[in-house]
Image (cartoon, rainbow, N blue to C red; front, side, top):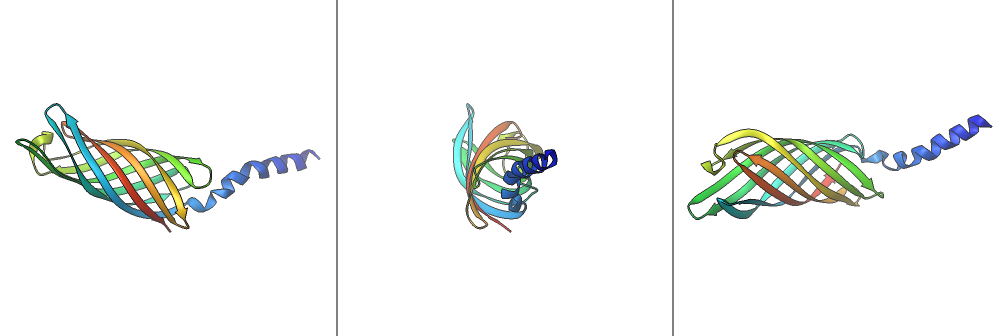
Amino acid sequence: MRAAKVISALFLLSTPVLAFADDSGLYVGGGVTRAEIDESRFDDKDDSYKLYAGYRLNNYLAFEGAVVDFGDMSDRDKHFDGQSAQASLRLGFPIGQRIRLFGTAGVHAWHADDDVAGKSEDVDALYGYGAEMDVLGGLGMRLEQETLKVGDIDLDQTTLSAYWRF
């Protein structure tokens, strides 16, 4: 009788894990990004794009790489035009079966055409948060906010994108 209770308890506890078992695997996505630099010496924003690919180990943990174009921003006599290649770790928290909140931490190698950032290229940290929703089959939508250190400035990046899980 005791063994039956233990087996039943293990089965019931594993049911939520089994519900998310198909969430692992490769995904690719892309979307529009709003990059913004808001400091006393430089205040501007621009639309750009982000393309990414990643591998979700399970519903909680994923590794991701991305390429981002920050757009072209200017403020009076200052000008900023840059790109970034990113590598990050994503920690997710499922809410129900289709929605996931997540946090992101990683690094990015960036290049800026002008020296508003104090340098023209470097590797710096990035961090952020967001939410994603599986819409239909492998198709999903994501909204995320990231802060990237770009030399002497902090760049805020808001992205709305779609992804496809294989």
